[in-house]
Image 1 (cartoon, rainbow, N blue to C red):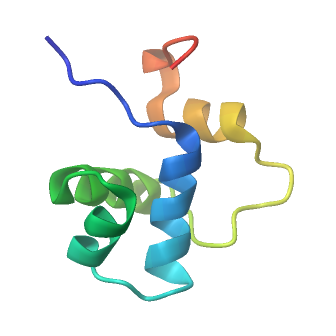
Image 2: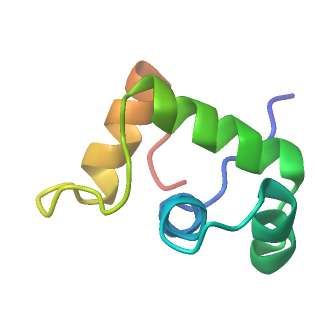
Length: 77
């Protein structure tokens, strides 16, 4: 069974804490209450899409989700 994806606002927080605050993956994981593996996964996905912080103004959660996960988007997650 696949693991449940964290809310998009937390993925935004991962990016913000990494790029703006310069926190380590371990510190980000502790701050957000998620695993270091999840932090590494979302940073890797955003790096693959060449995303940094701040995100473009017009990138809402839906657009970010489609960019990172494409066809794997699960409505309501």
